[in-house]
Image (tube, rainbow, N blue to C red):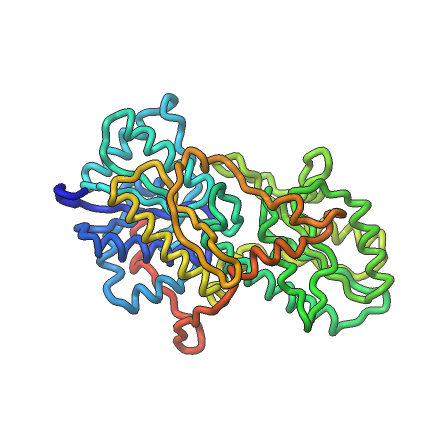
Amino acid sequence: MEGKKKRNVIVGQSGGPTAAINSSLAGVYRTAIDRGYSKVYGMLHGVQGLMEGRYVDLSEHIRTGLDAELLKRTPSAYLGSCRYKLPEIHDNQEVYVKIFKILEDLEIDCFIYIGGNDSMDTIKKLSDYAIVFGSDIRFVGCPKTIDNDLALTDHTPGYGSAAKYIGTSVKEIIRDGWSLETAKGQVLIVEIMGRNAGWLTGAAALAKGEDCDGPDAIYLPELPFDVDKFVKKVQEVLKKKSSVVVAVSEGIRDENGVYISELGNSVDYVDAFGHKQLTGTARYLCEVVSEKCNCKTRAIELSTLQRAASHLASRVDILEAYEVGGAAMKCADEGGSGQMVVIERTSDDPYASSTAVKDVHRIANDERLVPRDWITKDGTYVTSEFLTYVRPLIQGDVAPIVVDGIPRHLFVPGFQDLL
């Protein structure tokens, strides 16, 4: 961009929120300002909101250093998110004409999208359209997803904090179960997010340590799930202890590919990307265990808590999220487009990482699963290699800024009025 007057930047957030997504937004904003851009706009509810003309000038809302620090500590998507699937270019060019008209009217040079797999599909399509129709706007993806399933990156911002919350919560659930003995025993089944990838569920193993035995079994979606074998495993553990804790992914499926959640009262909602809402896995398994084992059961769904717990965020995660935001802005400023920032691990102990950029076409619509050799042979736990991988990502804390005993967050004033 040397020799050309810099214009403006626009940034959006898409997909499921995380405890670290706003730290990436802060990194994009700060780097854009430092590199001399006139304005940094924020799309309200991603590209879907942009198409409806909904955006804000971030300089009017992030005015001080304290605002930036609050933003880093604010969970969920500060700008609002969406799950909007852009059509294929040859199917509906009108959508692209509309988007690019808005971007040109705002004098945008760089478009940064913070999101997961589906969001990278958006970057891929917009960058392809720009090439075909001669626009010099650059489109760069900034990784975000607690699912940790993006290809070509060691891990994704948001995962470390979610893993820290899951490990902590499972440990507390184990302690709670241990304290209450029942005559016939009890089984607590913890349902954890993860449609096809078990990175989050595997993090339940972090509960294990000198002061805790950890969960009694962990089931990931990478392997077929057998309900009968599951019941047998629970029965075996119940013979040895009165309280059993099992972590299961919401996305576990039987050998025919049927989600276990669908065996109970499943939800029929399907999003724009064809993803069926998964819920009820733990409830169904509790019903089966209660009938087969004649014991007390409890289904525990961490649900949105695992992606919104900024009070338990990992310092490593928050810092890396900020860095990838800055790296995405740097990439776009230096002429990159159709790319996504990735994190490359350079050392486990002491932990160290750096950023690089990869072609988004190699990332979009792909999924990175937990390696088979990081899951035990019987498919009921994760190995030490998994823990070596995840443990560095949960290190350190980010103290909340507390007001009247409750963490303070940054919000867009009059947000609802802008919708």
